[in-house]
Each structure stands twice: as structure tokens, then as C-alpha cells.
Length: 330
Image (cartoon, rainbow, N blue to C red; front, side, top):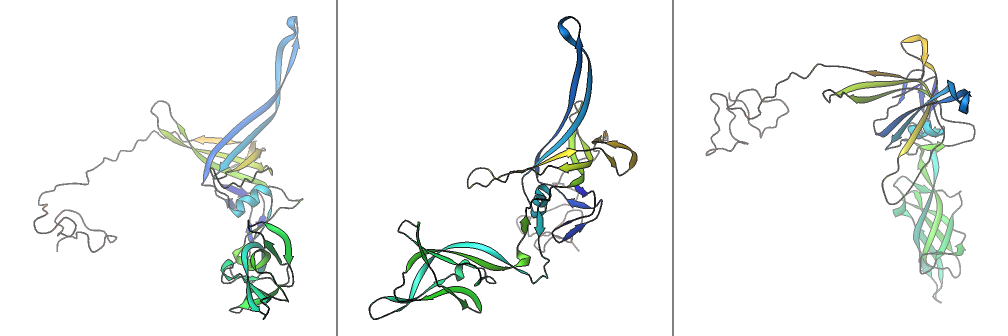
């Protein structure tokens, strides 16, 4: 659990000091690494080491997460998060590239195409439309589907069912056939999460609490443990890998621990505190059969099967059971 060290705003959400910001329940691995610098006084025969001084202690906590959300990526990279509220009427541009067909709509008596269109309805969501004020590039493709460098200009955005979803063009001898269209779509702002990575913002400081298990050697029992980092700074370094094959990418949170107070002791600063609950109480519940044969129990399979038959056993039927299950008599 990551908790805010001070009031911070991520997207439309404002988190107060001490308030949980992000709960990571998809972690794959975590590593706690400590390091210190050691210097030695040497002398005597062979210039051997005589005594050591240690300092510059560091503690690094690394967590590898299987999934990444807009908020966790904003925390990791220091990016700003644009996420309008559900009731927002904001609209945003979204870049899109689509393979399409230039179709002839008018052909003159000489067989030349004088009007053509590109219908992009199938490439757009019902509420989306083409932005008529943003650049629109229509590029002719060759027989192999490669861009030829031949750009067709002069397209006009036309409406389909009251929304701009079609491109039209008029001329004297227009080309038809496969093309690639590079354009911008207008989307509702509340359907888009926008991460903005700039130059002056970095990952922040958090109060982190983690749960794990320690296994006791004597009996193999797993003991619950809690690891607390009162003050960590997430490193702003990150790698964002994208691949069509192989295992899905994971995302690494590397945190530098700094001295800090826990919520319950303002007299001593620590880098980390680990609590292990040495609970020796064993589960005393005795397992019971789920196939009992109490006195008076009878299922007459020759009349009705055990699913639809009349219930003659002990106990009561819960409200969650359906009508086709056995019910108490009476």
C-alpha cells in the first residue's frame, strides 16, 4: 500500500497526507537490498586490515508489478494524469491511421472519376467523428500495401448520421483504390486517460506498507509479516517494453528508503521496520464429512433421484439454494 507523504493531486483525484494512493495486489516479486560503504585502517606487516568503519547505509526496495494502471504509471514516472470526470463534456483529439478504400461516387462519360469518397464509419466508435480542422493525409498504396508517396489532397469531411465520419473529394481524374488515411478523431474526454511526461516533474515520496510471509523452520508454518517503509522515494527511471510475442511486460518500481517516523512513534527514525507475527495457535477446527448418514435419512432413488427428490436429511436449506435443490420436509 502506497500512502501520500503530503497532499498531492493525480489526475482528477486529490489525496491528503496519509491517505492511501495506490494498492498493488498484482506484484510478482519484491527485493529488499541493503548496502553500506566500508573503509579500513591498514598497517603493520603486510599492510593488513586493522579496523573498519562503516557508513553511507542505503536501503532499496524493488517491486515488480504484473499490471500497470494510469495512476501507478503516473506515480512511477512523475507524469501528469489527465482524466476528466464522468460528467465532463470535454473532448480530446486522438490520432488514428486506417487502411481504407477510395471509392468512386461519380464517373463521367469518358470513364474518369470526378467524385470519390472514403467511408471511415467502421473505423470509428458510434460517438466518434473525424476532426475537420486537424491535418488529414490520404496516401495511395501500391499493390504490396506500401505507401507510394502520392498524397491526395483536398478532402472534405462529410456527415454520416449527423457525425463527421466520411471524406469526400471532387476533381477531374481522381485515383481510386487502396489508401492509408492519417487523421485525428474527436473523442469524449471522459473515455481517455492522458499521461503527460514533462521535464520538471518526477516520482514522489510515499509511506509504504507491504505484506509477506515468513516460514518457520521447526514446523513449516507460514507466519504473517508486515514491512513498513516510513519514507521512500520512487526512482523515476522506468522501461516501457512493448512486444507482440513472448510474456507480457512487467513494470518495476524501485524505491530508495530514507529515514522516517512510523505513524506510532515520533521519537525514532528508521529506514524500514519488519514485524513477524509468531502465532503458534493452530487451527482446532475438526473436519466433518459432507456425506453424513444420520438416523432417519432416506433417499428413494427408485422414485426420485437425489437432485429432485424430497429432502429427508438434517439441517436447513439456505436462502441461496435454488428451487431445484432438495428442501426440508414440512
